[in-house]
Length: 103
Image (tube, rainbow, N blue to C red):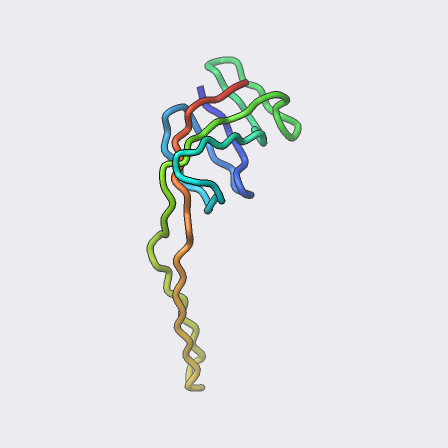
C-alpha cells in the first residue's frame, strides 16, 4: 500500500514504516501529525485518484527529528568587473516516519 501526499507544497510517495525528509514542520519531536491532502491511494489493484484530493483519506506520521541539511554555496561573479559574492545556505528539515495510511 502506498499514497501520494502533498506536504508543505511538495508531493511525496509514502508507504507505511518509511522514513521521509520534508521541509521544517513546527511541532515537537515525538508528536504525531496528520496530513489530509492525499492525492492518490493505491492498495494493490485498487487505485483511488483524487480530484484534487481523495475524500476521507489521511496519512499519519511521527516526527523523528529536526535538523539542517548540508551547506549549499551560492557564488555570483561577473567577469572582468571585480564583482564576486559568496553566500551559503542550510535548509532546515524534519524527518518523519509514516505510521499509517487511512483510505
